[in-house]
View 1: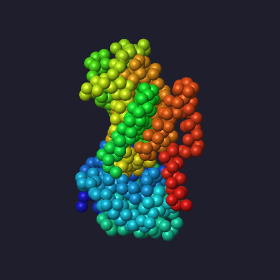
View 2: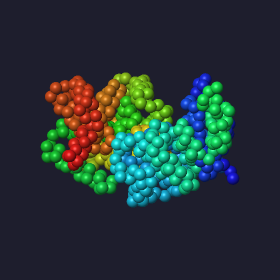
View 3: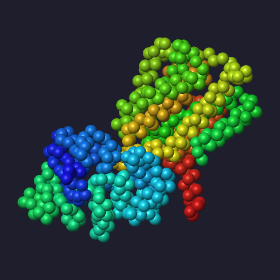
Length: 244
Length: 318
């Protein structure tokens, strides 16, 4: 089976600082990949290079059989990539329903070439809000939400674009144990619908229970990639996390 | 209410204003009214980029002056009727808006504002050194007393007033249509969070270019009849700081998130300035703007429209 996402030898520097150093990564359709690494190891930079927010200096990113280097972030979203941000970035002047309307108008419409009727759009927004348990707050503004609700809104907005690949960048940071479970259930439900998920996370219990495969970044290099239980016993991973 | 219905209502309101002016039979009304309507257009145009997209343009005077100087150029080169001049002004300022947008939209916040201010300075320098349109001496345009329209002799100032009234209706209808369209939603995402907008599939650069072009074109249209109104155009008056400051202050005082804000702000501030000009001196106009801006930032940061909406919400949900 050809991979859905193929990252080949990607490098990115910020001035003299090497953020990513020749990263290779393949993700199969329908897979649940966990991406871990200490703070500053380059996880978010990698996500930004994959999604087109940053442009990598060398190497290439292929998605769904096409090279997407040089494409703007919104074009990659149109092709089926979606992401949630580490710190939630809602459209703060719009209601929750309108927040979800944006990807429906700009991505789903652009992909399918037909505009849904206003009624259809509303119904779809409500369906998505219901999926994440925020239907009762459809008309409220993002500032009225709690942290966990904000994360759910981020995931719902990513889902609204009907993606093939979802990259959840620390969607659970700062949440309580039960809230983490809530988000994990949501992510599993998305994966059941056939969406490939890359989960970037520091909470190891969540990563271990969710991921089928684990990749580890340290100082911009990938040091391990494989089954979660093997990877966490990997000498280099133990050294990076616990120290010698 | 669809756009056609809205523009019909706007035209009806305009006709009532016209009827009132005719009944008043006062030339000064047309003089003052023209200036206020010109500010309605400028404030609405500014708001398309500044209010909807969140990009603060300090160079409104440049786009306005480009429209005015396109008219001066055409007046000498190949005289055409004022409505055609307005279209030419729209094309020239729209193209400059597009170019400026392409060069500066990678800048954010105050950097963008400074770049637009620089544009005004560069263009003013070019005009000052361009002898054909009068250079630093300025250019005279002797406007006829009256104009013949389908057999009726109409006072020229009344004619310019009607043209500006029509332009104001077009600008307001355009702004209102944008606000309720897919484009308006896209603009709002740019104002809220550009990264999140891109991640949701919004082509932010393209949308920003549409906004700069539209905004510039309307400002150019507002400037095109100006040489005929004023009679003598010089760079210092066309590129005056008043236009830049007023086009920002009026939407801010009225409210930037809806089409009605710039309308309310420009009528309020424009009328106050006209009254001050007659009763005290035009020199205090900028002082009025300054004081009102400070007052509104403290009392009503979301403008008059925001203030009313807030009270309305409280009243409905006590």
